[in-house]
Amino acid sequence: MSANRWASAWRRTTWWPFGASAVLAAWLAWGPAPAAGPASPAQRAWHQAETYLSAGRTEEARRLYRYVLRTAGPGEAALVGRARLALEYRLPVEEARRRLGRGDGAGALEVLAGIPAAHAAHPERGPYLEALRRQARAAARRGPGREGEARVLAALRARLEAYRRRHGRFPPDVEALNRLLPADRPPLEAHDIVGYRHGPWGYRLVLRRKGAAGGFVTLYGTAPLR
Image (tube, rainbow, N blue to C red):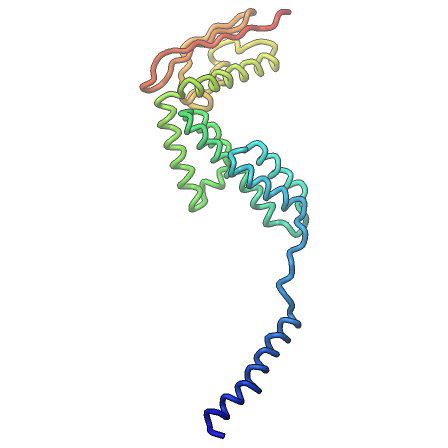
């Protein structure tokens, strides 16, 4: 038998069957990749929250991220970390971006102010947050727009009403009003208080829009009948 014919016969009878047997033996020994076990309640909630966040349904996402924190097991520390990051950073950033898209710079600044300071030190999150703040401050100087201003007035009304419930009256003077509503802090980034009157009947608050928007807006509140 020639050398070539001998080598060909050796491959057919020895090498290939040996190789096939080795592959088969290894497959039988190791088996296919094990199927993943059923997802835990926290894992299912996480995936649904991510779907909601991608769709802009932030409140539903927030509820499920909180559910993850409550229900995650001892071996799910990484999942807890991701849920906490979503609650502390990703959701507020999404809300701030949405408000900026509506021209509500003051509202965006208010949301960004609630993000824990630790994220500002992160090498990627910190610069991104600062860029968002710059955009929000610029938008606040331009004015909040009609929809944004309505939210500002609603926030002011809510704070004044909360003060009345706590103290039995509205702020009695400008000093008390300034303590309750500090200048250049949410929700007053885009407005200055230029007039305030109060009495048993309620209050009258006059605001001046900052920046190029200009103009005035007046907020009235009434006290409940006694």
